[in-house]
Structures are given as C-alpha cells and as structure tokens.
Image (cartoon, rainbow, N blue to C red):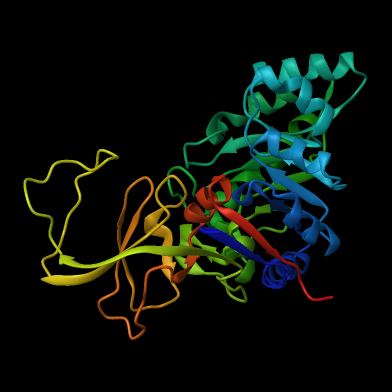
Length: 358
C-alpha cells in the first residue's frame, strides 16, 4: 500500500552513533528528540537497543505511548506544560521544561502532594523569542523558582533557531553560562545541567566552540534527517536517506506549464506562481499536503521537479527524466524535517520498518 515511509534502522543508528560520538567526546549528554516520528515505539526500541537512555518529546501523549510500549529510559517533556496536564507530567516525566512561575508552583504543589520531586529545567530566552524568561531579567525569576517546594531545579535551558531563526553562537552560549554562574553565586545552589539547544548547536560542537559548562543537547533532526536546517547544511558524517517516502503515480499527461484562466488563490489560500515552459509531461502522485510538505520532498530521481500540492495530490514535472514512468510506478523521495514530521503524523501514510543488521 502507498504512500508509505520506510525507516532504515541501519542508517538511523549510523546517524545516532555519529551524533552520540560527537557529544560524548565533549561530555555532553544526548536527549534523543522523538517528536518527528511521533515517538514510534518500533523505531524508539531500535535506539534503546543501541544505547539511547534519554528520550525527549514535546507531546505528553508521545511519552505515554513510549512508556506503554515498554521503553525503559528517562523522559524529558520539551513543550512547556499546560496546567491541565501536570498530574500526568509528574507521574510520567523525569525532566520538564518550565518558563512560568505560576506553572512551576502548581507543579510543586501537586508533586508535594504525591511525595515526589520532579526535575525542572527553567528555560531562558536568549533572543529567539519562543519560550523562556528574558535573559536580561532572568536571575530574579530563577531565584524565585529555586524556592518552590516539590521540585528540583536541575538546571537551565534555552531554545534557538525554531521561531526567530536565531543561530547559537559563542556569545549567546556564553550568556547562558553567565546566568548559571550568577545564579549559583547568589544562591549557593548548584545547577547540574545546562541544556544548550538542539541540532543547530552542532557546528559549535564540531568547532570546539561550545562552552564546556553546556552538558546537554536535544537532538532529533540531525539523527532522523541528517540535516541542520537552521544552519542550512547537511550534518557531517550523517546520511539524509534514513527515512524515505514512496508514492504511486495515478496520472501522467502532457499539459501546459501555466494554468488557463484567471488565477486566484489555491486551496490553502496561497497565490501560486508559474513559469512558462510550454507543454510539459506531468504526473500526479497520490499524496498531498495532508500527508507531506511539498517543499520538503526531494526526489531521488534528480530529473523530477516537484511543482505543487493540494490536500491529496502532488504534481511532478517528469519531462526531463530518462526513465519512462508509467501509471502505477513508485517514486521515491528523501524528505526534509518538516516533511518527515507530517508524513510520520499522517495515518494515511503506511510505515515500514527495516531493522538494523545484527
């Protein structure tokens, strides 16, 4: 059945070991971010068998799924939690990212009532403008956070590159170390962890420019996709085809390269643009924006051009292909992070698991 995504266990472990070795050399703990594959237990078990011990996901449901399916590691909740889910967070999560004192106090109350202590990573906004207390005013809030009962302030963390596209660099990484040092100086409380970011931090690791105080990174994209979209590069030592998409051709026609008639907006409210190349051979594959991000489709046949998608159809230009494609043929794609995320989430995309060699 198609469309389907194929997980190559051997290549996924190759990418995992590539990152693990880079971080181990610098004494940095790796939190494997599982959200891009919806924490699929069939894949997570492969990583667990190859040494992964800390699993990080933005969705509590994904953490519950991993635990239900026998994953034994530690779990980190990446998205700052809703107050409505704190009960389940305390029961199922080892590390939780927090950015609001109100949420932290409620977390502490519930944790105390259950005679538990949950480890908290308090988030600092270093300029990307997503979650976190603003770095210039963070010290006072951190001191207040450290006084909340029922929690252990394990450390501080930051997120870069995901909203504002801000790159991790020596300056903003030194800033979070300064915040840690200032906090410890003012309180006498030692912070055990600085979670310095994600895949976008890897260039600093590779160039030996990440401060030694940063001892945790949350990595997903570099392992599952072999890419680092924030830095616009392929990750050295990684492969980009550990996860591939296959889709079936349902139509092949010679058609104009420009639509005929007055152009309005497409089904998603966008105004498409077209280049006049005359009559072109086009095909439709049975997968669309409900399942994939067309901008993130990378045909393995480099002669194919991805033109556009609607909800359920993707149109390709196959004019320049040496292969003579036919109805029912299968076309294979590498995928970007955003495309992998959608394909993994879609219930209409079948999942195939190729286990690594023993």
